[in-house]
Amino acid sequence: MDGYALKGADIAGASADSPRRLPVIGIVAAGQLPERAVESGTAMRIMTGAPVPDGADTVVPFEETDEVKRKQEGRPLDEVAVFSEMAVGSNVRPAGEDIRQGELVLEAGTVVRAAEVGVLASLGLDRVRVVRRPVVSVLATGDELESAGAALSGGKIYDSNSFSVAASVVASGGIPRLLGIARDNLDDLNAKLAATAGSDLVITSAGVSKGDYDIVKDVLEQRGKMNFWSVRMRPAKPLAFGHLRDDGGRDVPLLGLPGNPVSAMVAFEMFARPAIRCMLGRPVRPRPSVDGVLTGPIRNYDGRRVYARVEVEKRDGVYYATPTGPQGSNILTSMSRANGLAICPEDLTAKQAGEQVRIIMLDWNEEVDL
Image 1 (cartoon, rainbow, N blue to C red):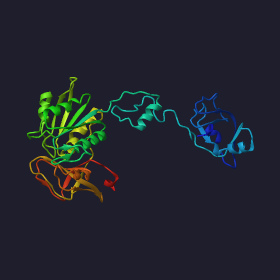
Image 2: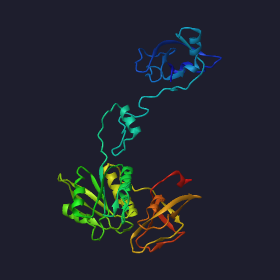
Image 3: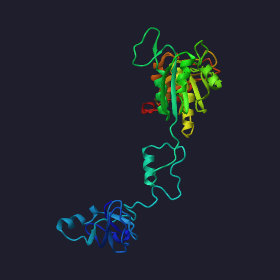
């Protein structure tokens, strides 16, 4: 605030009809220190960002004085007439108003965004210790896969998992490294896995079920350790986790996602996202969840926990969850239309329309709470 630094008590009762006139004893600009203190009955011109001189407790803007008129008339600025009474402390930012001495500024695990960078710079810090973003190698497997952009031949499908997983890695805070497609033979898979050197996490898709060409588990057992295989959930039952010994002798965690696109995305949400957050040093908090009313049934055929894709909206204070179409693990569009996963527990065979259901919110946008 450009104005006059003074004692608030000296302008008590000031008005346009009865201004308070004070001698001006100097000026202080931003980046300078005042040469003297402000005593009772005096004022000092002060510019925005300048330190308030000792003795002053209030700043009166130029607009509330005869500053402009004096300049227009060519009169010296050795005196000022103040036309407004102001509360003590007006237009003064106390030292420590933003951050107090001894206050914790940023907790460990805080994501350093633009605002945090500004806070650190305001403290004069040009370097801080951080947890780097984990590098996540992403590898699709399968003879049937073709890269996006290439022409499809008979029996082929496009690789979508690499890209949905990579996008999920970015959204979770990691750095994806796309390794392409490994064919269903040990030599090619081993060659592709050799490129994971320097990774903090390896995520594969497909090759973890019980088929003749599901060889990711075999390679994991040869080159490392299988910690577990198969989980009691739908979709994403054939999920593998273990540690891969890289060429540098490090044991790198490997998460083998199912090959079906929806299974891969749901498995990522349940397992990979928390792992990446842990690697970032961030709290491993679950996504927000709500209780809502189903508008259509959810089936549970085999005693697994079912995560059904639903679209959630709020009407009259109640959340409603509508299944987004067929729930096959290959129906990727059902995932793109969903903003939540409705849970049918293991001990139920179904959740019917009209019943309450717990919903994990994947996206929480303004439309949900309209």
